[in-house]
Image (cartoon, rainbow over all chains, first blue to last red; front, side):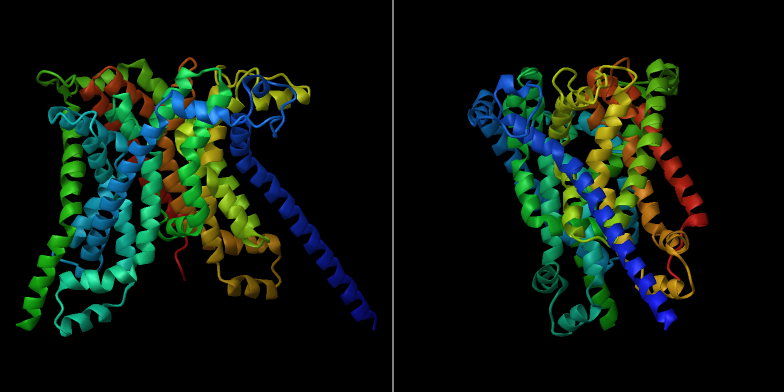
Length: 289
Length: 294
């Protein structure tokens, strides 16, 4: 009798302990989440303030009046519309190229396993180990010789130079598909070319979607490559123009914040809708661009 | 007979499908790496013709006081950034693992990762702004003296590291959380039945079982840390007093500031060697602490 009483009390004790533990965890997580998000909120908040209010003490997160005209000014003072178009154009070309050629390479390495495929795969891994800066210097020389500096072709080629992640991701997915699928198709008389389009592609669509989203974000955010290869302002991508904008308006923080907000809107929208794809893609490959 | 025909067909199609990526791997990867190697023995400013100088570039690099500073700063950055980022990420992943709303928090922590370095640096230089930045305003409110975080040689590196941790944390949280979710419930339950407490389970079950993830996270974080460029370039341009002048900044300055491409290649190769040595040491050491499967 007494034993069960004691047991009950102990159980109640651990239950209470558990509840306290979970509450503490939630408090820490909420604090960390606020820290993670605060810089973004502060950016948007400042972007809507007047120049005076941005410097006001005490600071407030909600602006007194929402000055949307900051956005209009940020958009028209420097050619952000042009930069948007440039970034979008480059992203579309690079994403298409990367997804297509990675799927093809993934099929060749993961299922066809042609003679020498292991050597080629080793080559991809080896190149990935080499720092980007090592490759960028000789390529800068080669592109100067070919008069490719300040052209988009240089950026597109650089993207191809250093994107083995797509190949790994596709190879991983295609390797996991059962061999019987392909064997059956071969017996039915299909050749390996049509198998790729009729069987492989439909089955790895989710992986290709993940890769496409990733690739879009890398390209949209890319800074080092355009910094080295682009000179003229009318060819600038969004990050380059934002960097220039910051140099131009060193004190007008509301305008700079408006420009920053404008520049991250596309990736934020993509993230909002494709957050699961992005995070799962990382979990599968464990790799970053 | 039939088999070999099939195999030939497979080889042929294999070449067709690998071709675009293979061409770019060779022309834009392997060949440039070889050129970088050759280039490091030449003096060349990109114009005119290169002249062979033997090991002079390397001698130049090692005698250059900026190289010593850059190596030192790169190590300082890596030695502080890597452990802080990893421990914090593991801590958060452990909290998230059993927490309510873990996928929501995971998405929130990952968010800084998706934003371009330029926007990140712009926001943080506003936060760090000496007179009107929110950080100093908060410090003043609590009676502390604000600082010129990015212009003070004593605080600049720290300020950059804090921003880097904030920016990169979510990525490692995602990897650790994935590792933790794979820790089989059975092991933990079995240990519990045998009388293990929370601490025993953590030290003797969770930590060993996620050790492959820890290795992956450590190596990728380390490789990225040694190549750190954007944060320094955008926040401090390597200053003040060269306190945030890292190897990648040094390479960029030498190659695209002074157009000493041979010397820049030499520095880049040194960076490459450092990365390879450290990754190799990591892998070697990992044999002692990483447990793969059963």
